[in-house]
Image (cartoon, rainbow, N blue to C red; front, side):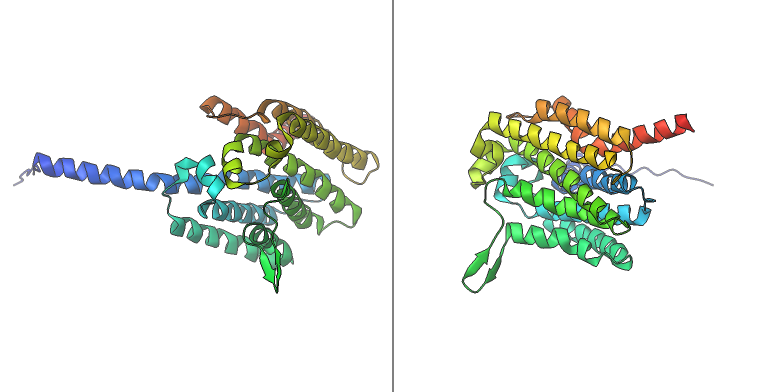
Length: 308
């Protein structure tokens, strides 16, 4: 014996349920956007560490690359979760995101990454981004002296370049027997990341101006700032080329060639102010800038397969 029983809820209850469900999805949306916003940059950062290993002609350590990516994710997510004044103007889609959720996940990622690096004798590099990030946003007060990195001309770009350049060079370079090689890696990635961060400043001119942050395009003007970025980009690759010619770094033509060409293209294309970024422009920017290291690793793998 069997029976089928169907229960139909009154219309007003169904409507109320749908409203509550849609409201929950709406409330979660900013938090999900916040958690997703740093995934690509962290993946790109992990691959940059892998590229540093390649340039140093050292077998890449997967766990170190993974740990680096986790720490990069944690640092960037924490920064965006703190609701800086300029971020609210530049990233309105993150308004209303759950800070507690973002900070909790960031802490877990950081602890996992720091544990891996500490086990490999890289404790100082695990905490380097957090220390410089704190000095940049909050500063340190010693007696009457207040040391704070934020606010100076191009200071944000200098902090980004030196911090992540040292982070990448330190994690990969600790295995190098040649002390000059990690220095060249630091200069190359430091200058490159300085340029990349400055390109994003063109998009964020409105928010940075409101917050009183003296970014390069705000202080120097768009034309002079763009010329400076081209000059630094050429300098970074001249350093890389000289290091390869002298045998300090490994001969990696795909890394050198693609990095130089795509960098010239994205400086020309994206070092321009924009009020509202279209989806097409966003996709191209993410592919060319944040996806650069992914493309390099992919092209190098394909080339290696063809040669083999």
